[in-house]
Amino acid sequence: MMSNEITDLIVAYALLFLVIIIAAVGFGPLDKKSFENDIKFSDDERLFLLNYLKTDVGDKKIADMIAFNENGDANSLKDLQGASRNILRFYGFNGRDYVLRVQYPNGDVKFLTASREGDLPSPEPRVDNRFRELEKYKTELGNGEKIRIPSMNSGLIIVELEVEDE
Amino acid sequence: MTLAQHMGYMIGYIILLGMAVGFTANFISLEDKFLVKLDHVEDSVVANRVVRCFSDEKEFGVINTAKLNDETLERCLGDKYLLNIKLTRTEGEDIRIETGTLGQARVVNRYVVADGKAAKLEVGYSLK
Image (cartoon, rainbow over all chains, first blue to last red; front, side, top):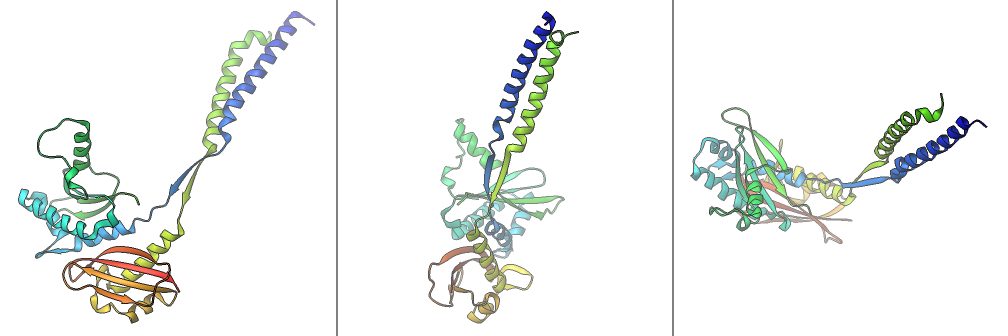
């Protein structure tokens, strides 16, 4: 056997070994990795949003109060927050935590009510992480159920209800 | 020309091939399972049928209190279930309808509007 052929044979074995190692690493994860997702029926929340907007408060419906509040003052927001708080406390969601927010077409998010309002940020400035987290919870929309109503100006107003999973 | 002279290219090729095989194997090994709990489906169907049954025409969830009686309920849901319905209102008295004594009951709540005001429809049901 020529010396070149012996070198080739050694190299071929080395390459074969490399192929086996890489293939073993490549096929290693072939054990099925499965992710289980529960299908959630959120028709409770959807129906709540639909009927919440239709609820009369005094001589107005909640949907009207939300729409009028777009250009409103702090008092109209307070009325809306008070009415929403009463409705949600009455319904309760079986003791699950919830938060209700509204976003106007200009991107402005207004907090309406939550199950544990005592936990929400106080007006005094605080800079800890918990405060930042709560501030975000109050001023940004999350992944809850959403319903859209037309704005009096243009665009759509989004009302979002986020409820803790059962 | 020997194999040893192309060793670098061969190793590069094998590594690329191995990476491609690795990515493919990883991709096909992932699996999503979506679990549907039949109890939840049944809760949803029964509660929504009861809401539909007592709602005004084309106003799902706006309860017509005149419709709240055993006859309407039986017409809507047949005789498969024993039902215990309670409409709790913010203004006015609660209304109850019972079609029998429930066994192992499941209870589902829905937020509805009755006479324009907030109300809660509590649907308790069990199989006959």
